[in-house]
Amino acid sequence: MKFGYLTTALIPQVAAIERECMDEPWSENMLASELNDASSRVIVGVDGDRVICYGGFRRSADEADILNVAVVKDLRGKGIGKQLFERLIDEAKMCGVKKLTLEVEEQNAPAIALYSRFGFEKVGVRKRYYKNRFDALIMRLELEEGLDSKTV
Ligand SMILES: CC(C)(COP(=O)(O)OP(=O)(O)OC[C@H]1O[C@@H](n2cnc3c(N)ncnc32)[C@H](O)[C@@H]1OP(=O)(O)O)[C@@H](O)C(=O)NCCC(=O)NCCS
Image (cartoon, rainbow, N blue to C red; front, side, top):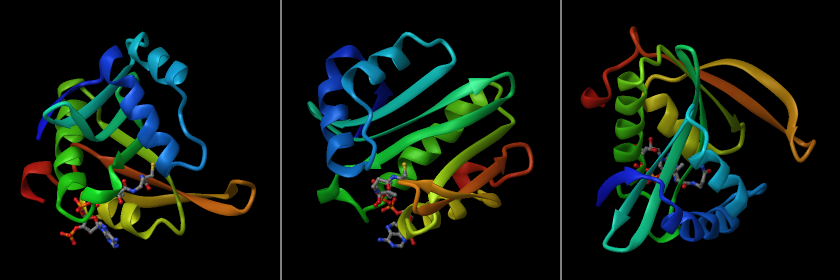
């Protein structure tokens, strides 16, 4: 797998993965607008021509919010999510980000386990955030004091 930035050519594949695994998928237009947003970085992992994972963040000063993160269904549980997160955290550090925040559905055990592994800690809850039913956990990683991604 090789990592790179999202490009226009890769948007249809990323949008297809979004439709497959997100309750509120990002459309091709939404993804295209991330490309034009200087505060946004979307990293894509490809195997040949196939997108197998992606994730991004949006920066504001020295803080950033993690955007959607996904690995294609048939390749989950093989360490790809971990590689993606190492890359995302390194990218955030290179951009001068000191604090990374994300929201995750409280029932999404695989994602919460992945984030916890990288040192993200629960800092709050948004009640009935998803589909007005499920709570969202707010998780945060202080990059200066957090685990170095290379050691995970
Ligand atoms: C969350 C997600 C990105 C993880 O990707 P992955 O490639 O399967 O993850 P990895 O194989 O790298 O596993 C990394 C860690 O995540 C955790 N994990 C992964 N799958 C898990 C599962 N089914 N149950 C519990 N923990 C799990 C483990 O801590 C694992 O580390 P370990 O294997 O050393 O114990 C993937 O499940 C996914 O794309 N889910 C759908 C989209 C989504 O929910 N995104 C997050 C919200 S935007």
